[in-house]
Length: 68
Image (tube, rainbow, N blue to C red):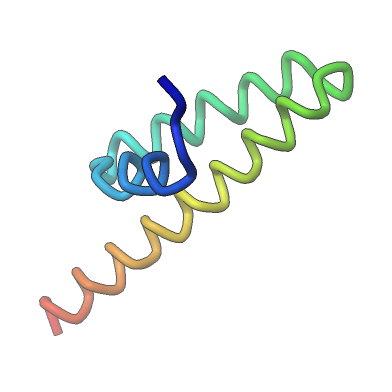
């Protein structure tokens, strides 16, 4: 079965805040361990982190609007 970008986006958007934070930490540790030897993997992980940060930023903004 092939995973499409849309499938990945939908999966990431359903992550909880804490789950996203944990995933960012895991990806950061993985990049630190593997260094430049795994550049393509690190680049893909960085792309995922950027997406997760965007999701978290949106959720935080929503929470702030609700609490304002």
